[in-house]
Length: 329
Image (cartoon, rainbow, N blue to C red; front, side, top):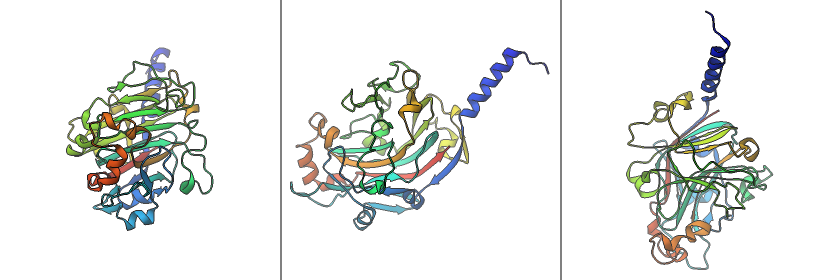
């Protein structure tokens, strides 16, 4: 069969694009294996929250972590009333044992923390590895030079979910790009934006908080490459969830996933130099730099710290429940 030069180039490009979106599974985590892939960080909260991050033994003793029916649950204390002199409300911050560069991660989430004063997050961050980093380091020692990627983040039950990047200087995003989300900022430089970074609001109120939970949760996925970062979201009840999201197998092809909820291309940002190998962080804090600063605007009662101190039962639903985490490289 005769193939002219132009046809060959087009074919080669098509093959390159297809193979670039194909990944092989490196980790299949659920229940206990999910928990084993992470370590608790009993550190001071770098975002100044009304929180006490506990170690794993305390989390188990206080029933802040549990595994049942092959699901992992991470929660805050919801039984203890605090005085103003007490440490903050007990909660969790866990970090993955592994770091990831080019990869895809699929989070199947049945429930996320909700309540006034809450600030839950699932994010990726670069951490300079020093001993004993995982127990003592508050943030990456070179932050934000290694980059931060927020997949799930919000405060005070305010929808929708916000995805964002936080970087060093000289990283911006186009105001118009191929995604379903809504731009909330284009300058990713953490110091130039008061750490707001370059954000995208997911165009779906069921992407966060009580509406996410009442709909049975859903799936978040991130695809991180040297030329772009994409974040996807599907509601639990959506009819357009890809088959390899619903039932993750040994390999995936992200070219079948459609338009991402948030898209961060390398048009005006060198992704490869602004982002190092990333750890996955999952945490829940209260009040602090964001949830506390906008608390009065959120329709929540009292002040943030007083509410968190005096209303433990309000945080009975302040928990993550993960069905699985599948990671591909």
